[in-house]
Length: 120
Image 1 (cartoon, rainbow, N blue to C red):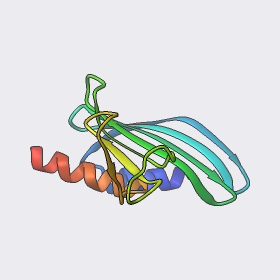
Image 2: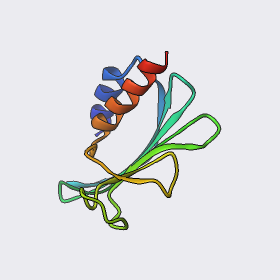
Image 3: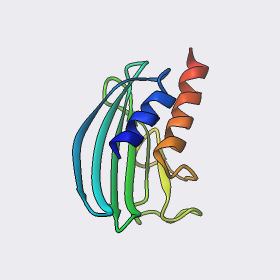
């Protein structure tokens, strides 16, 4: 998994300035991963993934600005009735819930990269 993170950090080197693995537990095909990516504009992406027997069961990707305000959080907690249930995102705050088709770290970073490139 750490090699995958290195590949992802390299792929998005124009927007990722640093990353820190805060938790990595692996047993066979199961793992728990927590990573914080520092982004070029000062914002950060907090990553949580839980994989059991090779299947990603839980994820949350929390993008926040440098003051800690949520920009978007993607997750699959089954707590909102949306078209893409249980996959959804909170855009701009906890109460603003939308369907989400971004379900992987790379898909989320693609969205963030597009937003950061537009804002330059």
